[in-house]
Amino acid sequence: MSARRGAAPRDWERVSKSVADAYFPHQLTPLRAGREPRLTLRTLDLGPVLIGYVGWGADVEIACDYPSAYEVNLPLTGHLASRARHGSVTSVPGQATVFRADTPSLITHWDATCTVLGVKFDRDWLDREAERVLGAGTVRVAGALPDQLPLEHGPARDWRHLVAGLSSQMRDGSLFSDQPIVREQLAGAVAAGFLLAGCPDSGRVPAPRPRAITRVVEAVRADPARAWTAAEMAAVAGTTVRRLQESFRDWVGCTPTEHLVGVRLQHARADLEAHHELSVSEIAARWGFSSASRFAAAFRNRYGHPPSQAR
Image (cartoon, rainbow, N blue to C red):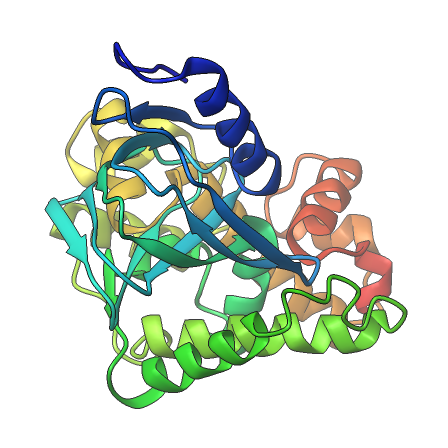
């Protein structure tokens, strides 16, 4: 955290740490010298989903890469300006800015009057929910998410009302604390509402992508068990490995290798459910995993339980 001349560094460090503990590590820069922070911070923890009110009471700039989580910021007052994939985005009440997991982002101006209703989703959990809600074709939801989500009409408006209703319970931090199944259902409802609002065409109409990316996606899906290398996938795209990785993150939301593993896991999961005569090791080998232990680790990371439980 850096503070410009005339500000109170200790006060800014304190409020920055409070928000970092609740949300993400970040670099905070006050934009006006001498302005004191007036932090607003309340949260409701639903496990893989965290809902919170955040306001700084001063004009600030924030740099963050949102490690292992997606963040959706809904301004209730004021405006929030940030740099997105394809230019600048400014959100005001009735709009939401969507930040991708593990992607460096810069909020260039969180204005002094801006209070945000923020929704934080665990990355791996939301990706699993996307596969369940949107269909088996989803590997990383980040590639389908918009940089900004209008909230005035249809499913997006309904989702905003759901989140606002839950946020009214923030003063009671123990909401359903002794009933984890209720909190789990609430988190699932928040995720499903967001996914259906933010990715309405996922699983039905493919999002437009550059032809080179589409060629790789189709090649991997046509032969996922093949011992693909990064260089081979780059050759299919007609580009370099580095450029392919950058483009994949922009348009698919993951690396080419992560996409390959995700496709293999989807096929393996279907086999586990349908072919009980095959062992876990046989299914792992069938879909290109070098060992049963690596397959089990990847499966658990993706679905939250071991392959044996899929049966």
